[in-house]
Amino acid sequence: TMTIKIKISKKFKCPPATQDINLNLKNRNKAIKEQNYGPPDPSKPNEKFWAAKMEMWNVDSEEELKDMVCGTCAAFNLKKKMQSCIAEGIGDDADPWATINAGKVGYCQFLKFKCAAKRTCDAWVSGGPIED
Image (cartoon, rainbow, N blue to C red; front, side, top):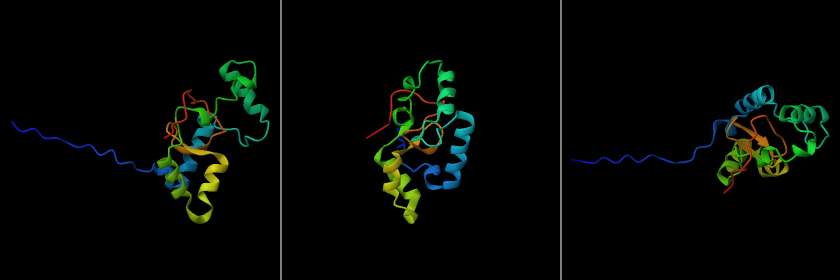
């Protein structure tokens, strides 16, 4: 008998949304509408946004939610290869690494878009981020 071995390629490919701004925006807008991705500006109080999250999670204080952000989510990919994909997708129109570092931008494996570490959504899961 002859044994045939099939090698499955594990070659990493950049997710389409890291390369296509329109696809990324489509996925992000879907995350805003369906998963309450936000807040719009994490540097502001965003009281209405956090009040809705408090109600959803049935907690009494915003402080209980402040660590439940993309930067701590199990689906938030900050691996070097992924951040290189994000930088490549941004291109030379802006300084890609300055942009990535300013917002600590990673890739959401669940919702398939680039997102900032200080935001959150209803799909948040503890145990992250995914790093090298």
